[in-house]
Length: 503
Ligand SMILES: Cc1cc2nc3c(=O)[nH]c(=O)nc-3n(C[C@H](O)[C@H](O)[C@H](O)COP(=O)(O)OP(=O)(O)OC[C@H]3O[C@@H](n4cnc5c(N)ncnc54)[C@H](O)[C@@H]3O)c2cc1C
Image 1 (tube, rainbow, N blue to C red):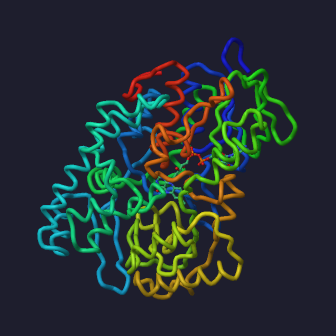
Image 2 (image 1 turned 45 degrees about the vertical axis):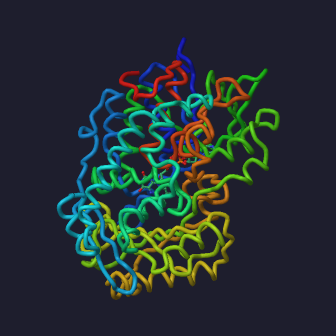
Image 3 (image 1 turned 180 degrees about the vertical axis):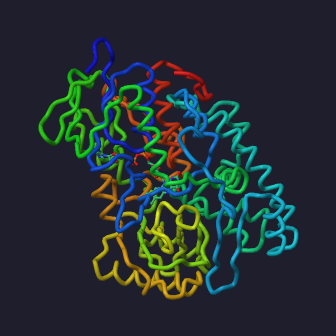
């Protein structure tokens, strides 16, 4: 600990944790980050095996404006740290039963022509849809995302009630998309992004149609070397300003005295004193496992009522050949869309006709796989809280691989796999202390958004804060970086709704 500096201890090294560490270190705090796992990055950590380099979680670098703003706050430029490539196509969609394969380019002329070929009039409708999505994004990000909510009056402002209608807060995403497009395949292409937020188009407010501005308007990017490079860059900047990062250092308890935080206790038994503590660990774990009963804001019943985002069935695969039928990002859409979402959110069972995602970063990046080989990351959204036997997981793995062979033109996939690792519900719970093994944490239902989402500070314990996907504004790498800025705003008493411009 350095003289006179306030000591900040951060629990967890996800995007929110490392982002805040870099900010606080630059702002003059003495910062220590304690991470239970062997490496930094949380859900965005990486691993290497047999010549392949895998990102464990996120693979879509979206909302480049949010990253640029964050780096500039640290006095840095994204391009000095990351080799960003704009993907073209942005992604490929495979509709099951070989009805269609569609490439989307985040280029309105090309994408409108594709939509038009699928539904007469859909090209023009896409232009209008994206115009409205852009407007929503500008209002949402410009006025609502960078704001801390303390009282209902901060949320239910006249401005919100006025903008709320324009933002389509009160309509479901499914109904909203149906107003523009009739063809079910076209509808799917605008609804799938809801899964990025751990939600279903049947529950989510149409506010989130702004995500189409994100993927089809702004475009999809990739940092060469993988998403782990983003964590590396932020950690590098944090270290430059003096932040210290400790891996394999699980925190067992947040220590308090007279209603104020005073430090943390590591699993090793060591006590580390702190002026402020910020937990980046999932909130259920923070509340129910790291805090004493009297310091908790909520009990079990609160968590039981929470809607968790889906978990995921993940495969990390290395193959001994390339697959020309895939591009960097690939989506396979189920035939019965509604049933698929039911299997994830309502029943819940392993989806019988699953939609899923396959990332092949080796299509773009020779650094992530040996020459002539493919690095494949497969993500099937499944319900959180599912208990699955090894036999069920084995059978599901086979089902997904066979579907990839038949639906994605990946003949010979199964026999080409030389490396494989599987990750599912229990692994999320164990590796990230994730409640019910959710992949993303708290879902973005309307009742878990803004004022209704857990806040960035503790109402019980002074100088205890929360950062990351379970707090405001929510899920995704860019939002976790915004959440770091929300905590910082609290520390300096900034109640504005616009992004910070300096520290
Ligand atoms: C499979 C998958 C795919 C995704 N794809 C995308 C994508 O393409 N684009 C995108 O933007 N987002 C994506 N996301 C979401 C995004 O990865 C997350 O929202 C974000 O990375 C979460 O960051 P966080 O700050 O909440 O911290 P987390 O990543 O949740 O990290 C929290 C850290 O706290 C640590 N921790 C927990 N308990 C303790 C303890 N007691 N002591 C010490 N450490 C502890 C955990 O080990 C973990 O490292 C994806 C997520 C997953 C899982």
